[in-house]
Image (cartoon, rainbow, N blue to C red; front, side, top):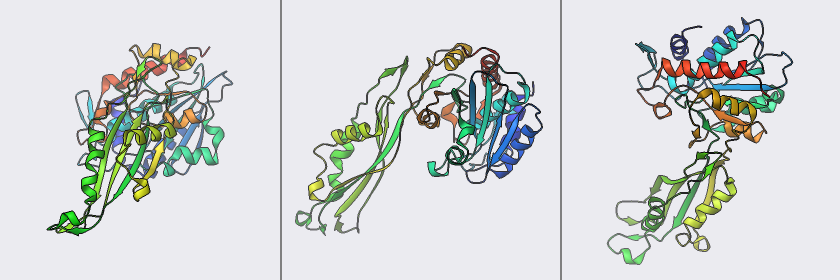
Length: 357
């Protein structure tokens, strides 16, 4: 087996900030085209490699090639059994595992589609998965999928949905020496912020995994001048909701939380800026149940949003499973340990050598 830590470092050393994945896509494509049992296709900076063995089931292993911008961590550094560097966790370690599986598993018991895609870390309209779905949807057909997102080598099932709402409240301008002549819009945000600060979200347990809903104010703006009572203020709220709710239901729930703080008849506005549906765990699917057994530790809920949602929306049960501590993703000290790489590789190897039924 290739040294997975060294392979991760090799990938880290090829810059691939979102929208600039070409060099890494070229490298991945060259590695995969050298494998005789794979059919390889490329669309923009998305590389798809497939086995075609006539197996009764097909599994997708998907990982994104892009990273967030560097933070003085552009180059890989290996110290002992740890690889440091941009994307080591999110998610070049996962891509390294998938590349090694693609190059070593000539006769898996399920057909496998390896997907390496661009632009996961930016707005969804740029996503390589969405480009593939629009132009070559058959390449993404499968019975189940595994996303190599960092999970510390533990199954993180499903994902929570996310939405952002912008609340704009109106006031009336006045001189700050005579504030009673006006109405301070910024002050009107106080009860909104209090509701957010005291929000206690649901913690539903789905398929044995506990999700945790949250509501946070993430951006506030307002003010005209240092001596003017402001007549408008705006706050953006981010709501993470469990996957047993739709985005529409989640919006209704946030509106209920804000009840009495918003006067839409008086000119206040509540706008949904964006949203993404969550995904139920679906761990009872035979392939995913086998992966849970192979992973050897109890699954937990994915509290963030991932492209598991994308596959679920296409009717493909999916889960997150990859090396790397997710709390280190996007951090300056991003790093991954050899043991997690090898643990994920071993579990996926066991899955691919097993029988899907």
